[in-house]
Image 1 (cartoon, rainbow, N blue to C red):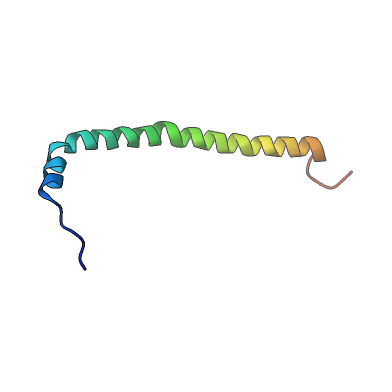
Image 2 (cartoon, one colour):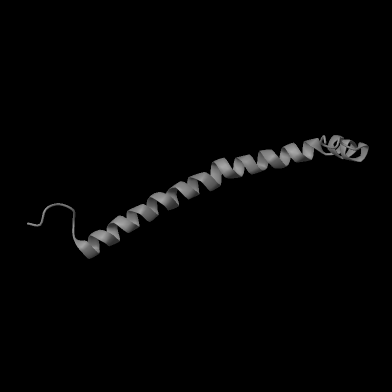
Length: 66
């Protein structure tokens, strides 16, 4: 059993809206690369730093007890 071919209606819909879809994809790409990933990286690094800071507050600095 093979996959169904595109219908004429689907082909016409694809031909009518490619610039809009490309513009949407470009906007989404720019949002992800310029806003989302940098913000996510800052949150991850900041969260890890906060965890280290809190653990040192509770357990003391690393190293042999002195």
